[in-house]
Image (tube, rainbow, N blue to C red; front, side, top):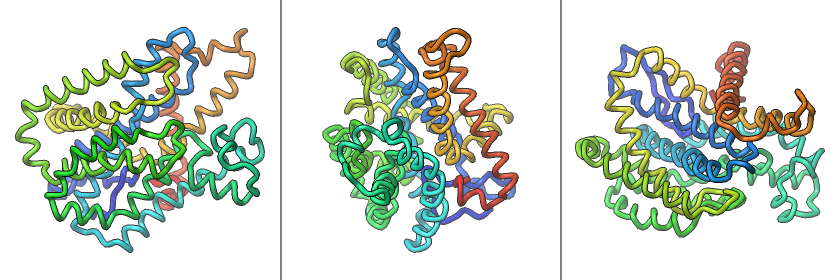
Length: 369
C-alpha cells in the first residue's frame, strides 16, 4: 500500500491492506474520522430543526453535537504529523489543490448560483451587510473566500490557511519543545472564540490553531500518551463532562453558537475517543468496521453534500403543506432527528457511490473521495 505524502481532515485516507505493515494504517484514526463526519451531520441537522418547544434540549444537544469541527481539525493535525516524513511543500499544495480546493470550487457552484440569483433567500444577512454593492464577479469571489454560500463551507478557506502554513507547522514538529506552547495556544482559543457567524476566516484559523497542533502533538507522542491514557482518560472524560454541563448551564437561549469553552471539552474528548477506538479495535465487529471505514472513506463527499440535502428538505418542509401541517416536519423531536440524520447520511452515501461508479478515480476531483 502506498500512502500519499499528504493527508488532511478531508483527504481520502488509504484503505487497509493486509499485506501492508501495521504501522502504515491507523484504523482507529480512520474510525475516528467516521465519528467526526457523523458529528458534523448531526450538528447541522440540529441546527436546521425548529426547537421553540424544546429550548433546553436544544442547548444541551447543541453543546454535545455541534462544533464537530474540533474533531476534524484534530484528525487533520494528527495525520499531517503522521505523514510528515514524506512532506514536500510543492507536492503537498498540489495535492490539496486537486483533492480539496478544486472539489470545493466545483461543488460550490449550485449554492453560489442560488445566492446570486435568489440573494434575499440564500445569501447570509451578515454577508449582504458586510459586502454591499459588489459586482457579480466580486460577490462570487467573496463567497468563495468566505464560504458563506453554504453553512459548512466556511471551513474551506480556513483549512486552506493551514495548508499555506504547513512549513511552519512542520518546523514546529521538528522542534518538539514548541509543543510546550500548547497551554498558551489553548488559552488563546478560549480568548479568541469561534466567529459568531463563521464569518471571519482569520479568527477561525487562530481559534482552531491549538486544536490542529494538539492533533500533531498526539501523533508525535502517541506511544507515550498511550502509556498514560489507561488512567488519564478518566480525568479527561470528567473534565469534558464538567465543561459540557457548565456550557449548558451558562449558554443563552436560543443557542446560537458554541461558547468559548466548547473547544476545550471537544479537545479532551478527542483523546478519550481515540483511546477507546484503539483499545476496542479488535472487539469491534468486522461488519461495523467495514461500515465505519466506508463512511470515513466518503467523509469528504458527505461533508460537501449533506447541507444541500438539508437545505432542500427544510425549504420544502417549511413552505409546502404536507399531510395537513406546515411545521410537523421541521419541529424538533428525537424521532424526526434520528430519521433525518440517518436519511441524510444514507442519501449522501448513495449519491457518492453512484458518482464514483460513473467517474471512477476522477470523482476525487469533484467530491474529494
